[in-house]
Image 1 (cartoon, rainbow, N blue to C red):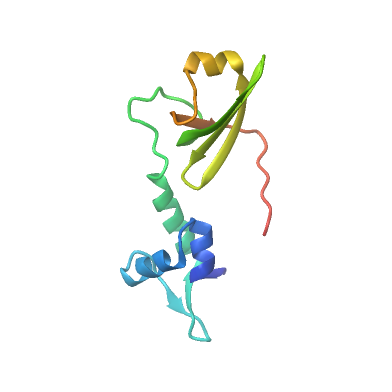
Image 2: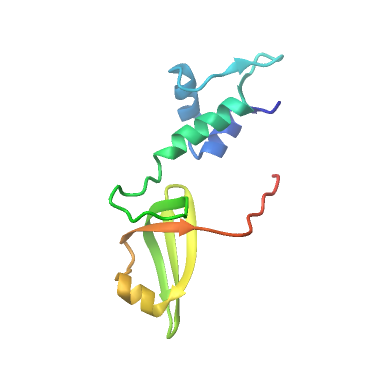
Length: 132
């Protein structure tokens, strides 16, 4: 079974090591001591904590239209590159950077501009998983 150090957990959760220590000291995240006396977090417990924590981080507004897309990220447009036909929209949603290619017409219809809050929806037939 995998276990993670405080630093590794912090990196995976996108927070500082001090934040993970505070969560552990406050009882929000279970830690145990390994054979060398270091504090470690069980992989299954860390996965459950990450899922619970992530559930509210990118919540889609309540009045949103129902959709089959389950990967929705509320964020802010940080960059916009528009040419005659296509546009590249960059969105920062918490620690996640998403880049979408859309038509110029879509940018105009949605009145997209840097600083606008948007919901990025991700649906893919191919998802690649790599080990670090």
